[in-house]
Length: 121
Image (cartoon, rainbow, N blue to C red):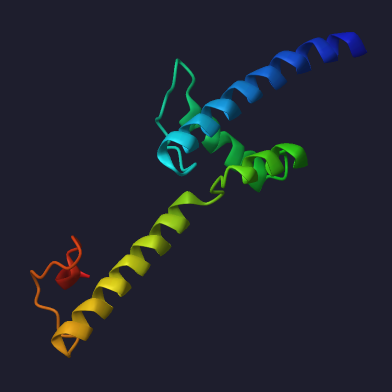
């Protein structure tokens, strides 16, 4: 019975490692590990795999060693929250530039600053 469990575990571990390696390659080429949910590489649905890893992590079902390995890549456990924070920071920085230049914070509705629609923010 133990041999049967080991036989099942090894292919799963190998599959996990293949997906992890694909995420690592994505990070190395893109500079971040926030893989889009629908992203595929060589037939591996690594975006969906990342979604699954986040879900397992939230449920406390992801092995601590796997958590550590993903964290070495800078794996985002809550990518939407990080994205929203980065966006808010970018708008705040653009507003600071505008205020420094114009001397006020009354941004015209259609004004763009640093490529952002600052007037609509």
